[in-house]
Length: 148
Image (tube, rainbow, N blue to C red; front, top):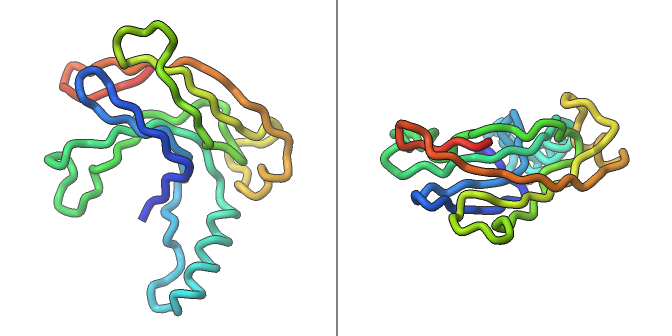
């Protein structure tokens, strides 16, 4: 299964639920199922630490869009540019004075000297910086969500 570290939820005025969380291009469960569960945990944790991470916003789809396997339940909207290494620990709040619930102020930290392919554990040892930005969701023509 996929792993969404440090998740933060937000909802739009038209009822979409967005998830701000760490983005990992690989599933967390990489160890073979035939290995003892205790060893699986160690292998998965080690591999998770050695693979790259980023930060992203996702859409939590209504159950009708999940599909038979559930693969469509959480849909990637976009990754945040410039997030790499040790990243993806969001703080999210509505923008001050915003009358609709479609704009947020988002704070996230990221490694400042890593490239996007750097392992997460490498980013842990590098300098990091907190970035604060605005995120606005716009309703797509087909009823889905987007962000800008």
